[in-house]
Length: 225
Image (cartoon, rainbow, N blue to C red):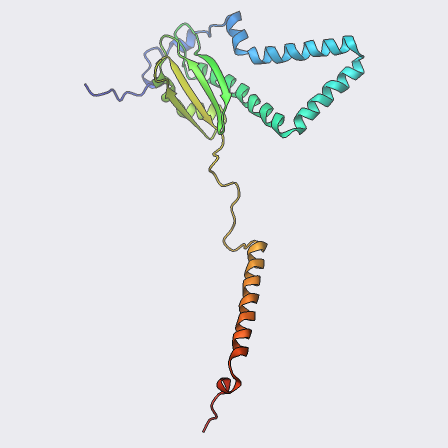
């Protein structure tokens, strides 16, 4: 039997009208899991600030926190790490929003579970757990929507080779092989001009030496009759 060419999207969804009455399923555990990074960051900063205020003064605590944040922003390694983690947070929330808007959820309103998201050389990679009623083909049919929702250059969806309920979403933000600088053909760098001038000067010196080595009587032009 040939494989079905049916596109899995909203146009042939037999439960289109469920979106008019369905509500997203929210729970305390699910909210904590979706906002775990933010909760951890806020808790850590609050605990550190409280400890500094208790150990020192408020002014010194504020200066210490501001100096630490400025130092981390000035160091290239920590700055790149913070930017990549920030985009991971943005991608996670954008994927969750997309799953609801594109109806990539169960009839009871349960969204797919984003187990892990990490930065890559070209963007972010998310590992998504599909609940019963959602599959890899659903995400594959909404690749364009994923790309637009995550503000990305491109998006790629793959299925785990061993477990079909796991979907891998690669968000491509930049291409490492893409040229970052375009040089116009009529613009010649200064180094090339210097090297060309040096080669031309050397050729002139060699031509003069070769001409000087030729006897004068041989270089004389014959007298016209």
